[in-house]
Image (cartoon, rainbow, N blue to C red):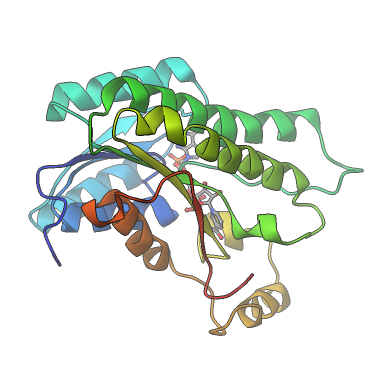
Length: 247
Ligand SMILES: NC(=O)c1ccc[n+]([C@@H]2O[C@H](COP(=O)([O-])OP(=O)(O)OC[C@H]3O[C@@H](n4cnc5c(N)ncnc54)[C@H](OP(=O)(O)O)[C@@H]3O)[C@@H](O)[C@H]2O)c1
């Protein structure tokens, strides 16, 4: 693996499991020092840290509930105290709770917006305070936003907000020489996606892309690493669908 991110410091929110974990491992393999953020999985976060260290990389775990701006602020302060600076912020932490409109609750709405939207926005604000020229922000949307699946309205709404402020913030961050983009994965085999789906639904979703399989976290990690690196410096305000031709 190239060492293109040697000397960089990255925060990956929600990297104890799933896509965030693969992203953190990939950035570390490319030489970045990585913060493994989690909210309620300390054991899994520590396993990610140990795995990275075993391969000669640098990582540390920091607990912070991304739905709480005060904890996001502390996450950035702690990262700086540990590694001296912050270059890359990957706003991956997110949840999905699907419900038809007739059954949706205020709690489902508030929780998804708190983590997916408020969390991402205030992490962008912290990035604005801490990142310097050459900094990179990568937010997370979903390819579901290009579909009209029943029951996804709240979740897709949260990601629509993320895509829109990714665009709106590009010029504010551009004035500091920082890029901000989003990736929008299609179905990826993680806890978030697999929970509650029948084998039939999974088979149908496999057939819905050009390659006849589900995405793997590593399929997304490679694209995030490109957006985190030097080669992507002329891309900003964009959402890149990463879905094997799903939409
Ligand atoms: N999987 C897919 O098919 C898919 C498709 C499109 C987009 N996405 C997006 O990709 C991102 C990652 O999804 P995933 O599938 O990897 O999910 P996942 O397997 O459920 O993992 C979610 C991660 O986020 C963390 N997290 C959850 N709530 C948090 C909070 N309040 N504060 C900090 N961390 C928190 C979890 O840590 P704890 O266990 O410690 O809470 C975990 O590490 C999400 O933004 C999701 O919307 C996923």
